[in-house]
Every structure is written in structure tokens, then in C-alpha cells.
Length: 103
Length: 401
Image (cartoon, chains in turn orange, cyan):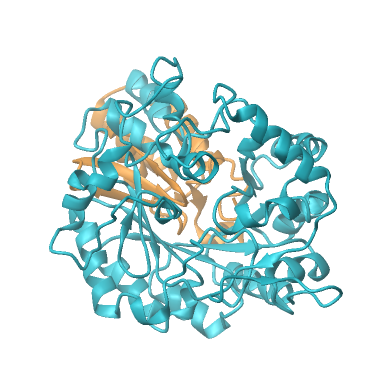
């Protein structure tokens, strides 16, 4: 957890995948996967869409704005869901904050 | 959006990746190509651990696949849908071409993991491996201090070196797993080993009780823990898992001798895993060559890796549940543990097709459990060190280290 340790996701966070977690499209199985030590996860389409926005530059707030525009849904509902999902991934060690935020 | 996201959270839970894919009825259904493969690059190793998972008959250096052969294997693995490659051994860093092989794994899109004893690494070599795209490092520890650790490893100053390499690993921003193989000679250090993993800034700790076949079976009398030690171990691990949530992930492998049900060995024979031996044999598990009478095909044969996985006699012999005798055949757990471990069944009963004696339903369970208890209570603490010469007995006073 060294890289993702104690991250609390808020709208100001700029999350990204740590070095040991790689998001990849598996051509053989035609599915997106997260590769991590001793583990392969199969995130669903929405999780994949959100994870692709996690580049360590874009803030969670900007991500929520983007998704609100795309899905024409109430911002508040999307914000709650996105933050909960990112926090869940962070707690499992699959998200970290951009480097300058942690060190 | 809300509903989908809720589903998304469920789908991103850390399930067994294969089961998730199987539920989706993708091409990775049962007997599809494994997601991860273990590449045992060499059986050469500077350590002499008495529980080594390599076979008693080690592959000599001269029989190892060449650099070009391994690169071809890595390319083929990526093409058929393998996602992760674990570079293991022996000691994989004993191969002079390791950086080249890691670079090749990166080039063909494989997620690479180095499973190492660390004692041969320099900071420069580790840095080169990181630059080549290495994704994760797993270092084995034999104890939390040199007295016990170097004795078990059979190598002087091994522990000191491991601590140094673990530090470099984190300095290079590589994720670190500490692997601690536990047995009667070091279980008293478990609390300190857990703290050591925290102090080393490790991401994961594997607390793996010895599995008894091959070298470990020969050393069972010196390694087998007592029931009291196992109970204390489970208590310590459970306590640490709660205390260190979000700091250190702990994977715990219980010793199956003291379990009621056998382990789901390899996730089921030929179901989700294979490894490649130094000489290129495709094996259902790293101990499979201990089962005599099975012929394992090599990457040097005329067959593709996918063909060997899907069609070879050795992989199909114990696949699924059709091969099972009673009491497995009518057992409600048969698709949960797949009858346990074939290598253990062979080592302890002489027939790999028998129920794993670790299961309480095996007619041999009682006898084996009693024997283990007696061995654990004995004061036979002398190791037979692992080496190419068939093993060397620990001498009085002068340890293998």
C-alpha cells in the first residue's frame, strides 16, 4: 500500500494509477482489466471510463464535470458515486495521488 | 449512472480475476489460457533453503532455455492471452539475461513480477530492471534477524543483503511484497517479521506456511510446526490484518496438514495456472515433475504452448472432476477444492489420483496428521540443505551458513 496509503479522495484530488496497477484492454478476452501484483481485476465499463480519466493531472472535480455533461445527470449524484468508487479503489491500493501531492 | 456505478464497485472488488471473467462467459472460461504464468528461469540459487519448492532433481544450468528461447516463449504467452509473468527460479537473477527478458516482457505487454532471494542484486541491476519495465518485486525472507534467517537460507550475510535490496526497491518506487515462508524454526519470529515488512515499507506480506513435498517433505521433521504454533500464527495474522488495514496487505497460507479441507491447489489442476521449468517443460504446478508416470511436454517440442495446455495428456489427466475417486466424486466440495493437491496425494499415498490426505475425508488423513504431530513434537531440528548434490545435512555447530 506504500504508494496508495491513506489517500482520502475528494473533489480536489488528482488521482492516478500507481506503477504496480496497470489498466489494459485484454484483446484475447475482449475485456478491460486492471493488472496488479498477484491479481487481475475486471472493472466494468463505467469504472474503466473513470479510471481512464485518472491521469494524475485532472482533478476529481473536473472528472465529475465531464461525466455530468456526458450523461446529463445531476452533478451531485454523479459526484457521490464517483468519489465512492475512487475511494474504494484507493483503499485497495489501485489509486494514488499525483507525486507532488504525496511527497 | 448511479446503478451502473454501484455495479461497477461490485465488479471491481478483488475477486479471483478468473471467476469474474468466467461469470461473463468470456473466452477465459474454464481451461481458457491462464491469466498468469510462472517462468522458472533457472534452478541455480545461492540459497539452500530446506523447504525449496524446486524438484529434488534440479535442472542443470546447461539444460536451461536460451535467451532467444525465453523471448520466443514470452512473445507466444502474450499472443495467446497471458497477462502476467512471474520471473522465478531457483534464483532468477542468476540469469545474466534477466534485464533483457524483463524488457522483452514489457515490449510484448506482459505485467512482470520478480520473485527473488535478492542476494545477487546490486542497486545498478535493480535500477536497470526497473527501467526495463519491471512492475513488482517479491523478496523472500527467512526470518527477521540474521541468526535464524541465515541458518535457514544456508548462506552467510543473506539477511543483511535482503534488507538492503528491499530498501533499494522502495527507493526506486517499485512495489514490494515480502514473502516469509514459515515453519517450526522461525514461527516464533512472526510478529517481528510483520513489523519488519511495515518498516521496509512493503505493500504486501505473504505469510506462507511450508507446503510439504519435495525438499520440504524430506525436512518435514525439522520444519513441521505444532498445533499450538499454528493457532498462535492465525491469531497473530488476524490481529495484524485489522491493525494494518490500509498499510500492509497480508496473504496467509495455512499449512494444510492442520486443516479440515485440502487447499484448492493451483486453483485446480490445469484450470488457471501453468509454469515453465528452466528446461522448458510446461507444468501444471512447480512440483508436478515429482509425480512419476506423467509426461510433460516442452516448449522445445513441436507443439505450441496453447496446444500443450489444452490437449496434453498430463494436463487433462486430473482436470475438472471426472477423474475423481470416492470420497471426492460424491463430495459437495469437489468443485471448491478440486480434490486438493495431486503432488501431495502422490507423495503421501503413492497415487496422484487419490484424495489429498490433507482432507479429513481421506482414509489416510488420521495417520498422516498423527505423524505430523509427532514430528512437530520431536527435537529433530537438523536440516537437509537443498543443492544440486542431492542435499547436504546440516552439521553440528556449523550451520549451512
